[in-house]
Length: 332
Image: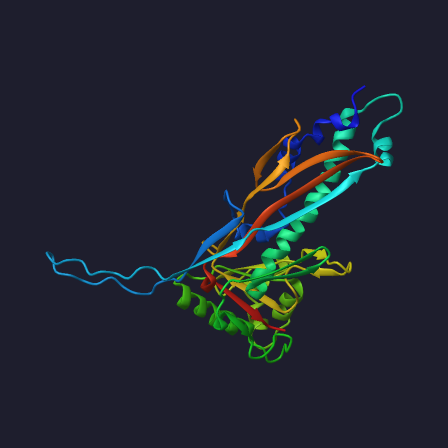
């Protein structure tokens, strides 16, 4: 009879392939930071400023004027390392091994389920990092267990971190439609790109729907149809609206939303940012090691007690490459 450690699902190559295929359609921050693989554990990127200058007319035989180089600032930072592990203990193995037979398919599914749960924790951390960057303009990590501390400032300007002049929680006097138009103009003016998408949670959306100053009249027309069909307004001021209520649990087991109440994130999605993923050294099934870029998974066994461990992780860093394409608003 083969041993538990010989399950195909516990092979390092198989585990790495599995964790890279787990679908996470509910974590929408990933689409704003497409992955870019790199061969180093240090990421370097250029913060680029859009241009509003115009080319000049010249006579037919005249020399072309010289244009200035694109304004850019080179930044670099070490990739963050995320990993989690758990043990497939004796009780779990007894549950997998059906009496009188070694049930490979059943066992591999159980291992895959445990691996999926580990991967979900890794992906929750990655998503939290993305939205921390998008809602604050920084990635400020001060973790006590285990101790990890770092700060990355993405250079979002003060005019792109705004507070509504009248908070949207004041339903009778706030002007959310006018605010969105004004902020849209700011992004377009500074980045030379028109913002396309706005993100908030349902608490913030409720302030828009309940607004009597500007929105109630719009609800009688197309905006009202959106609300009836989708449960929230899906498009306003020429931008797509995303209501995002996915949450996670923090270290004290409190439920937190990736987008906090009262925050509105406006972006021009294309070219906003990326996620650098780098190499990690992991043990191979033959006893040596190899480098894997991006997410990985592997397993090992201990002799006393006799346990099998599984681990998954990633080296990565989300970066905002064009901070003028982002506007962070506090509205409540």
